[in-house]
Image (tube, rainbow, N blue to C red; front, side):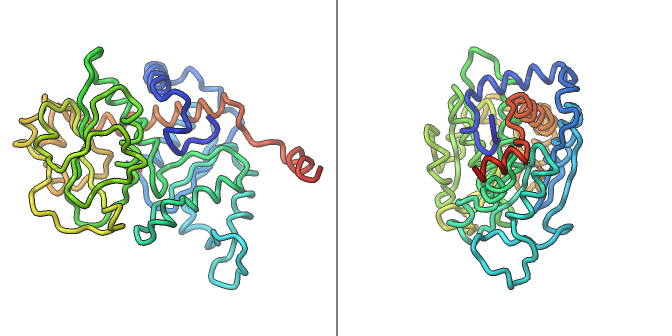
Length: 331
Ligand code: CP
């Protein structure tokens, strides 16, 4: 694993999930692996779980961690190449990323979408510009289109509660919200679930279909009740429209998951990535239900991050010695 930005960066997702569960049983077994290595965490948007779980994971591996809220604490970044920098942007990403890479051995970045420009958001320009210029492995802490650390934690949680060899029915259901949210969590969850040997269904109102790139292999329905029937895991999440990009057209029926709908399921594990708006997206009674896996998902964020960092550290994909890099380029 060189970078971690999508499930496609992983040779075998099933093995990575097993490795994370094994690591969870003995978290301090690699406490020297990250000695003298530094993780840089760069945030362009708020975070509670990703920020703290990734810091904790790095520290368990013996790494130093530096965190920067790039949008508030640094110079305004120019993300476009080949521009004359006579606007308000003070520093080019080429310069800033190269500096960050000289201080850090691995860099994580959180960069949400605009939800106004689909082409720009789905090009992952910010993530790719950092990867292009920093010369070290990059971990997505949630990009414009995907949230792979969350999905790995979700997959770990499902695996821990999956009664093998039974093939579970996993349902991702759209939920109401008061504002437009990105598609990154559902895209990513779908991308990971489609790689596993499970029965996977996505239920959403008409108009809220996700990008086909992430849902190949999923059953897709507009009928929430039909989807929930005999479900073993129900992942509740809001997202704004992909096709009518970033819009939130009104939905006529009630899509909030509640105790009444829960009765349709096979006593399903209830999942949500958090933060959740109680009794808007999901009923409080289900968030606090004995079959709620929501806190377990959040706790598993540490082991997801630790497994990814461990693989990158062991893979030897650290930055090249800078003098070696420059002499190679000059040759
Ligand atoms: N689920 C998740 O990514 O939480 P944060 O936004 O708090 O990091």
